[in-house]
Image 1 (cartoon, one colour):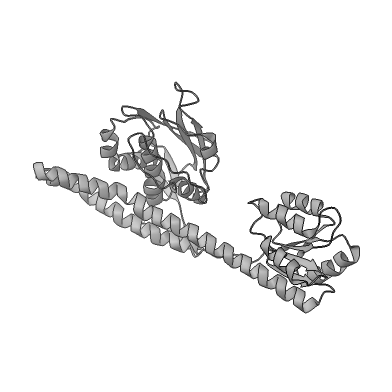
Image 2 (spheres, one colour):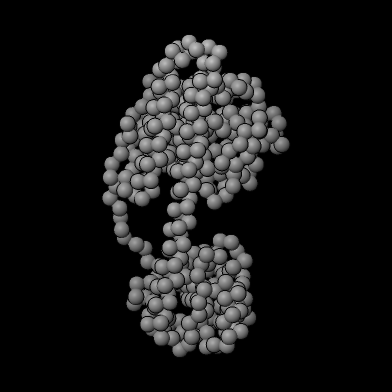
Length: 374
């Protein structure tokens, strides 16, 4: 059963940060005072170049950008900002005394979301700022919700594949050997139980994503958890003639939530290790403990991964799926999920990899889990 509890959500909000870009001190003073009095955090830039440098150092939630500035005007500054993918989602509102249609159209074409005319009307200024901050927040919420749903779909489609695949294999084997159903009855029941627990896990993740609950880790024997996972993946490993070399101290316990640790962490890691190992390969598991901390490493000697993929491994927005050495397909969502669960247990994860094209004799991937001792 899951161990969980309701979570008290901290509703305090950080101040929205607004960057004012204007070369006129009086405009900066007026704008800064209005925004500060209404609870916003204000950052100042007096030129387009300074604005670009400021955004690199600290990301604002919204930019108020003067059109008429020497050297680099507002249009050029906006164009430079929107060229950088890191800043494309920052709403830019032009500050302008010019209300010609062609200038307004140009501003929108360059990526601005609105404009405010000088001299400033306080009510209009605040209304437009509030509107675009709310729109950005809504956009971020939708994007976050989309990623969370991708995670849930991954758990259902990927993690259920292992127990259901095992059940399917046993059913096929029983056509030639009906007695196998009775022989493997307990394993059959365990796979069904795992499938149901994964569905419960998805429901739990929905509650966690909505910050209503959190998983509570408890003490479990690490070797038993590993063997539970490897049992489910046994047929997959045998298909590629993959062997596991396991060196886990007896009675070593870890503090984890069992269902997510076995099905969403170990199963994912072992599946990838099998997937990217060459047929006949070996995967090494080692664990040690020190001062209440457990280090578990899973080392394969397969094809490894390029550094370009390694740096995006935990980013759901980046495509990291690849075809395995026997043509196995994947979704690329596994590692972000693993990191999410590991961190929910108060642990961490590290990935090291050498691509086969870089060093054919030492290629492979090592995944290191840092866990609390149970």
